[in-house]
Image (cartoon, one colour):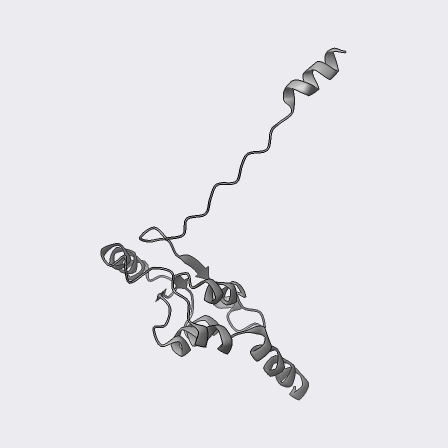
Length: 134
């Protein structure tokens, strides 16, 4: 019966989930990293599509051009985006300091145009056509 007593004492209780903040803190951003060796592969960071849906600021570290930088170019400043290439530590620091200095510029905002441009319904037919033509 001692075992039962120990088990009862070791039970954990579930914690209430913390409420998610509705407003981002000054330098809160999604970070996307793409390694140079993988940048020409078929795959790419698909989290960019979720980021576009919620409008989170993006800090991209990786090669340019890439699929991420193509999306940023198409965005035409419709969502907060900063990029630095591999090894550009100084530029990365500049971006972070700039975001701290201008917190209102780097807040969450959505773009219905971008959401529809990069939606699954828009991209999947293009991908299928590309694969079928190969």
